[in-house]
Image (cartoon, rainbow, N blue to C red; front, side):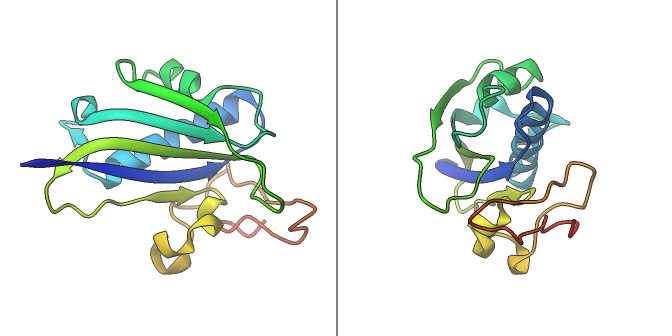
Length: 156
């Protein structure tokens, strides 16, 4: 029997059409894979009810919902995007996602924070460590509030 769950995740990205598209797709793919929402190598969209994205004000090059659709994902899903509330010291260049989906009852939802967003919820990253392997998409997190912060995955 299946039960309704909510999956959360976040990623940081550069303010470019390409990176917003790539990081949104990677986050979506990892959330679905980690939560076994894959059937015969295809994503089980029938078990997904809706996706809500929020983006920080500094990400205005692309809409993550439109980027997800352009990637061929979520074609028949309800997608919605809002601007994240501005908060002093908040993590910049961040896309957050909330996926409402059906999983087997008793499942333990796996949330994904990647590409610098692990700092938002270290309790939901293994041992507080970043998720995923280092790759060329790592970007340092530098802001006036956090001038010395580096990419938690690759150290650059």
